[in-house]
Amino acid sequence: MRFTFFFSCRRLLPLLLLLVGLLLVVTQASAQTARAPQAMIPSPPQLAASSWILMDADSGRVLAEHKADERLPPASLTKLMTAYLVERELDRGNIAPDDLVPISEKAWRTGGSKMFIEVDTQVPVSELLHGIIIVSGNDASVAMAEYLAGGERPFADLMNQHASRLGMNNTHFVNATGLPDDDHYSSARDLALLSKHIINDYPEHYAMYATKHFSYGGIEQPNRNRLLWRDSSVDGLKTGWTEAAGYCLVASAKRNDMRLISVVMGTASEEARAQETQKLLSYGFRYYETLKLYDAGAVLNTPRVWGGDKNQLRVGVDRKVVMTVPRARSEELTAKLDIQADLSAPITAGDRVGTMEVRQGDKVVGEQPLVALESIEEGGLFKRFFDQIQRFFTNLIGGWFD
Image (cartoon, rainbow, N blue to C red; front, side):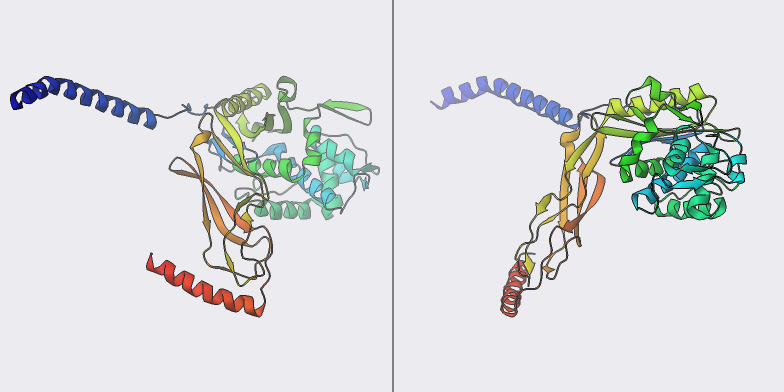
């Protein structure tokens, strides 16, 4: 019996070794498959331009950039800030679209691109805003600067204050038009940030940026953004040119639920700025996608609150949470909630009570404040006393297991 068993084991041993070897091979292959990236992303295109950036308009993620913080003359891209301030005043009700703006001799005489307004006339705000955005009217820009701030210099001060508020750290304006000045500069990143605010802060005005023609005083002019004719997804924003700046273009396009902003500065021609912009936009839409993770007001947790008229607090986000990721890698996104321990009443709706960290694999790709979605008042005397006792023993027991 012992000899038979030993002989059988000897015959089975090669088979067992073979099975173990196959198992190791399969395990190793599975591990390699798990480690392999699910989507291959090529390097961003290199452009024939001085500076550029590609940014998602919702998440703010930068998908490609080159010298994006370099201070360069922005030419008529300056008028993005001029238009933004007009839109802001309209939105706040400080001015109305049909308000009549007197046209000064200075505005009328301003050189460069024009809307062709006449001196000593009055033009509605809405017409001047169209003239600024669509045909890049220097005359219209100066007229609005004088109307809103009493002059172009004080208006430039206002532009700089808002540039600082928006985080445009490499920008300084001295006029409302972008006409050359050594102390007048911006950067690709700053102009992308400004465009993001134009699109998201005042969406009711944004449709104007896609207008292909504008006529005033019997003179019709085309929008100089060639991509409005070539790509139906492109709907803004602004062109610019001076000899010092070269040919520049800030463009935005939306495909499905994804909107991108591209800034290209310092190209050699009108055609070059259009082609280089198309390269950036094509790259972004082909290899990335923007996903909505949570709606504004979504409840993500209900932690315990001590001493309040309620025991649980609804915690979540007060704004839409979106993330831009390489295509086919959305399943790698995870969210980790870090909520303040030992919450006590009173709590006011909107108070920050923690942070949500979004990861793609092991990499942190975004953070979002967690806020109270409701207010909780202090409870009565008995409720507060009872909660103090319960809180003491809860913390005591929890400390034993730390």
